[in-house]
Length: 180
Image (cartoon, rainbow, N blue to C red; front, top):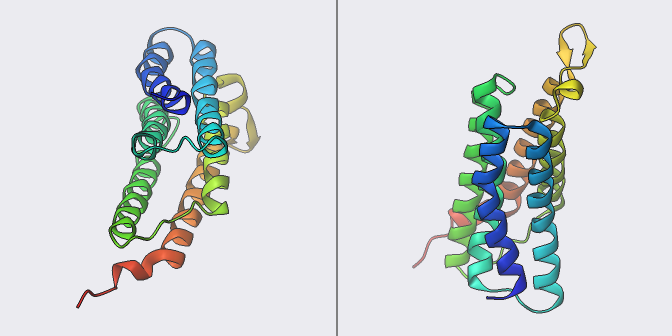
């Protein structure tokens, strides 16, 4: 198993640790684990591409590990009342829809590269989830009852929807292609 795949497996293993620490122990320790796990995503991709170490295992497990990390935090935030359940559902729906689109495209021999809006969405989501993990920051009131926490889930929601729309606008034609 190469280094990028080991980092992906590490990220997968950190998800339940992150959840347990966040739920049962300490938000700041959970934040550190979340940051380390998030950084492995950046590092494993860089190493895999730069050294020609891209594997089918990595192509499958890397996005799965990312989704599990992000969604584990969001589910906990829903449980804590920090994020509306419908926002989490929009994120889940977008991830499933884009993954499905990628599978259809792959079956046609088409590789869907990540667009800039997807990269921005990922960055905004990771930063937003980190900010939401720190109550003293997240609960800071900006205007009226509008908090930093609310701003973070709105940013996550907007970037998720925009990137999903971009993926389908650029690649949705694979869904209407008919084989003869």
